[in-house]
Image 1 (cartoon, rainbow, N blue to C red):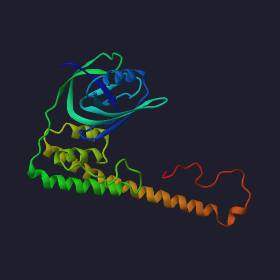
Image 2 (cartoon, rainbow, N blue to C red):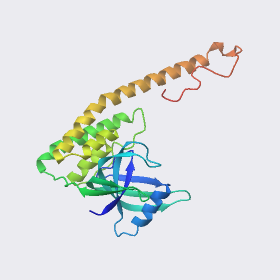
Image 3 (tube, one colour):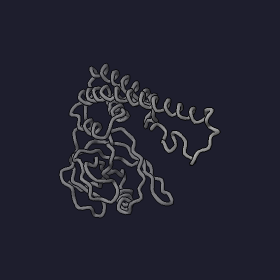
Image 4 (cartoon, rainbow, N blue to C red):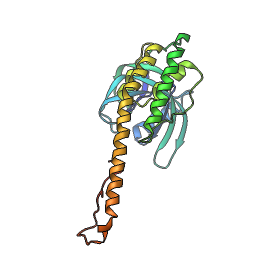
Length: 242
């Protein structure tokens, strides 16, 4: 096994999904400089289990994805790179940071597509798009509900898992799916499980907005011309949606 450059993150990279990174740490600048000498520069991405992205000293999950670099844009204070999730990997051994994280990895077999999974894939797409549309009613989401997907059914299955409004631990679970059927079923189950929570959050946001409107209305009522001892008014200091 050859050592592979690794980039532990607080998010999960799934196959067929884009990844945008701002590189400002010197160790990753060195890593990028070395990778760009390769004909097809790529690095491994794993989810951080404990710790932070910057500074090192973190603990990492062993399951990850290779990220193929597609574009590099140098800036004044950082370097922005765009990469895409490729094949899945499993870390067999973490090596010393020299100066960036490196590991010995093995490839995880690619998933296979079966035509009988088409109805399930379509059901997953309907559910994911519905939940994305509902979630944007109270907060800006990462993905638009109408985002186009690949025409390749396996690729789009990964994309649906990637745009689903799930947390990193759930997406890490999806990344380890042993079959395409398992990937689709788990995505559907997790999205359906998340939907009531998103609906509840939307209701809470609407209640907070109504309460804020009520407080503002009271603040502009007939008693406004009375003297006060300070500049504070009802609702002052609240963040939108609190």
